[in-house]
Amino acid sequence: MSSNSTEATNDSAGSILGGGCRLDPIVLSVQCACFSPDGSQLVVGAGERVMVYDPGDGALIRLLQAHRGAVHTLAYCADGKKFASGSADKNVIIWTSKMEGILKYSHSEAIQCVAYNPVTFQLASCAASDFAFWSSEVKAVQKYRVAGRITCCAWATSGHHLAVGLASGCVSIRDKCGEEVQRWTRDSAVWALAFSGSTLLVTDWNDTLSFYNIHGQQVLKERNIGISAVWVCTMGELIVVAGAGGWTVLTAEGVPVSAAALDWVWCAVPAPARDSLALACQDGTLWCYQLVFSTVHGLYRDRYAYRENITDVIIQHLSTGNKVRIKCHDRVHKIAIYKKRLAVQLPERIVVYEVGDSDPDCMLYRVREKIPLKQECSLLVATGDALLLCQDTKLVMIGKKIPKTWTVPAPIRYVKVTPLYSEEVLLLGLLNGEVWQVQVKSGSSTVLVRAEGSGAGAVRCLDVSASRARLAVVDEHSVCRVYALPAGDLLYTSKPFASCLEEYVKSSVPNVVIAMAMTVVSSPLPPRSRPAWRA
Image 1: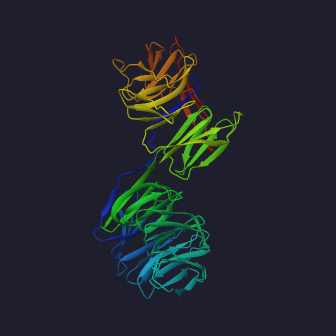
Image 2: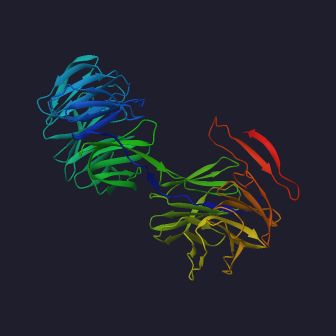
Image 3: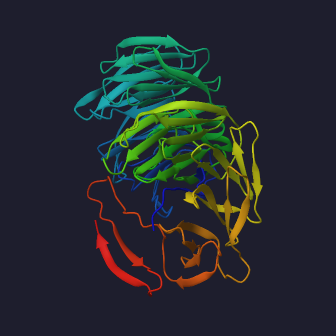
């Protein structure tokens, strides 16, 4: 079956924080944690102990007791061969990946932070008033005095510079020889630093996240994050901040994605190659959370639009392979695409784009209108000249002087825009198995398939034949029922079906093999199955 139509599915627009799993009921405060580069070890500082866990099952692998004060900081080297711990006992200990202590050196005050250079593997350790460099090639530990109390440090991804944060609000940039090359001052204490590419992320005690280049120039707008942060790090394209009040996930531009309230989180470290985080908390608990991000997308013929990095929309032409990126600079909640129109729902507005060129392969989208709207919805639907929002059992047309509203007897699960009887209509698939037809221009609505006696489950997807004489509906049990139009009489039931869309599956990702089985039904002949094929 084929039709000029668009599909909308019940995708959640935001991210979902998976349930936390308590790894161990540690009595003492957990102030720091880090993963080994291969993700096989989670190293935790709890009181005076260094504890090494298996992240897979939460089992304690080894308990290391060499410090005589609370362990404040941990860092694993990018080579995977060693990690360092710093403590209130003024000592830094270097451990092998086999959990053997091989070196110890001291500062004159409690250790505040340690960080390995990602390129040279040189270790930087900071006490309250000085910092030091250590490497396996140089036996002597070089120390440098600092005017002010050090709170945090971070190496640039290039390995050329070390950023040092101070309680006075100063940020000091040092080269690999310890010399200061740049300095600037924030309005309040700087408690956490991290590099995201060439951008330095700075959090201060005014609940502010700032973005700087290495020369001290702000490169993005400051963001109020609502947390007095003592920790900041990157997780792919995302930013994770933790501190007094809990932790939050932000986009690369500081747009909030998700947040969780906790009394005090000392650090939130991402697991390598996983969408999960380990949280070290003041109350003595160590938690593991998984971040699950829903797919936000829309499809019309050979144009596929999808969300990327939470704030961007990518439109891909499936025939030519061309792509275009639209930077929305805000969280993308919903996407709808139909013919030349693209609608993107943001937190406080819907932006409508259009392709102005008559060339069918043109990918130049321009803003046509912005509709102020702050409203949650389960589906955003675009037609030839209207926008509609679905929320539970209601369908509302927006952006018109006289908005229209339709109410159906069950929550809307699926919407398809398609020409039917020489008019553009909406076909609504409901949770109770019914299918309704809505004519947007006239405002009329009728039921095509009734739930009584049909035995159908919630509608997963639907489509009409090219002749517009048949309606195929796939329910939540993967059962496909074919009905005659316009009467709605059930013609036959087939099983199994994953989808009733006869669209070729294409992939732009190299080395991906797609296998699927296709079942073709041609009335009045019985179903015929085609063997699985690979593309």
